[in-house]
Length: 244
Image (cartoon, rainbow, N blue to C red; front, side, top):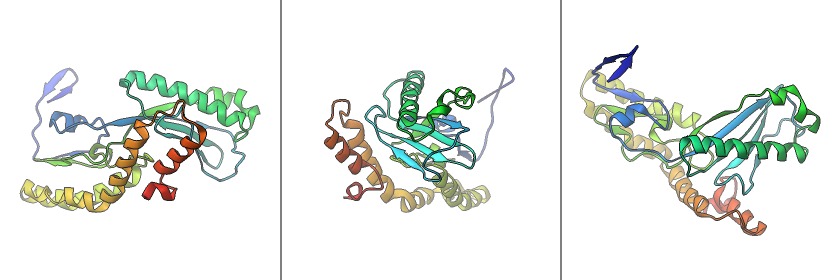
């Protein structure tokens, strides 16, 4: 059922493709199960990075279960964090924006961005954009009757890095031929989509979900520096320890 201008409409369809993110309304209507998320917050600042064209990743205990990033662009930088929170959606938004402010101050104070720019209008007026990132791995039923979930709605975003664009595009590409065949025939044609997702993302997601559980269970607030470094190496994709 849809609400259209205050009027309730009932729409029937042979198939529905849920490409509407981790809080998928289509999947919720189908009672297809939920997805655990972490919160992300980012600003685009019209300021130059001192590291030139290097993308930088930051780890700090106050960015719980996640990381910070500084991605340089031609005339600006993307500065952001993603972190795990057990709060409600509203509480998570407040928590991450507070943590983002702390992270922004840290980046400027340590010289990654010019301190003079911290008081500039470009920084003051930059709007923070926040959202939810699915981190629990692929949903148990990416195909349910005539419902097909792709991208974030299927939980295909990488549970550690939060990278979601490639899985979204690739999962749609994999699902499309099956959807076309199902439209011409039976919904049974959708069946192989789950196996295709597993073949493409299974090993990567299995390792990421295992390390995400380690990351979320860690009590990082009072953790000694060396122990925190070992945790980072165990739970970040760039280190050998992550894959062991």
